[in-house]
Length: 138
Image (cartoon, rainbow, N blue to C red):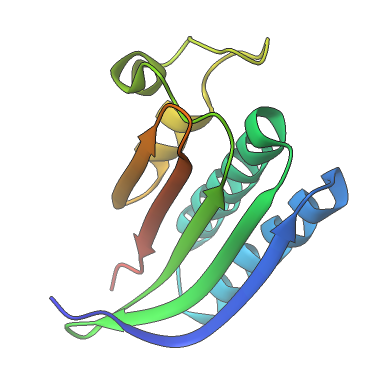
């Protein structure tokens, strides 16, 4: 499947205000791509959780929010990048309930359940890249 990027907004994630900006952008793009009310809420929540993870674990990074299309489908893709410490125990982090930042530890696992496609690249000392996609259902 070839995904076409129709529009991309790249934003810094360095403050709590940036988290709100990413969340609002995700919501607007999802609405513009024709996602359902539930899907808009899901992608908006994932945006907030993943941006907060960047702040909590790396203190700074970037987020891109993209309007995408593939095989007649319309959707939203988001990519979160940081140069933080990476995730030492990825399976444990994805299982939920585990956190190194004194949180509930539900950001990654919860976000993965909210989206249609979830990919993560990480290694200790190498940072983390999380890519998610939510597709419109017609």
